[in-house]
Image 1: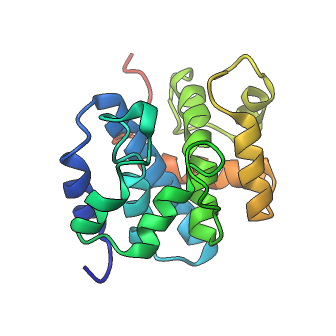
Image 2: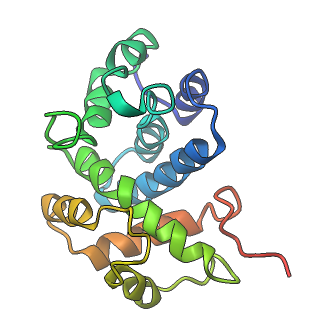
Length: 190
């Protein structure tokens, strides 16, 4: 495979990921990665595909995350640089693959950040559709809100990108807004 497409990524991921919350997380990270690609002038679909595939082995091996990713993805024809990007999102947690490219740094950062954005959007009647950065940043500063999301890791990713948290959050929110219905973040029906 010369280039990883989103369709191919979904097909590969479907072999290993079946739990609804993991599929939803894949969709969130994919949407955020598409927006980051736009920001950096990257190949949007490729970045989205990498985002979709990033937790390929998590459902089956949560305690050995990313230890069972490389070979199956290689066999499925995923390009080496995309496999490396996927491995790099576990840097310092479960891999020693340091994020070096804009795509790798973005995946490392938005993986956790999408969780906080998703949580903030779910608390609003209109979901993410009218979520403004100012409102999100209040949630970000509240350490008790979405407490399981690792803010230090997100800030480390922002530093790698040379961007501040507000700038990255704004890009991620807009990227996720574009997929609000698919992400089930288009508000609560009255």
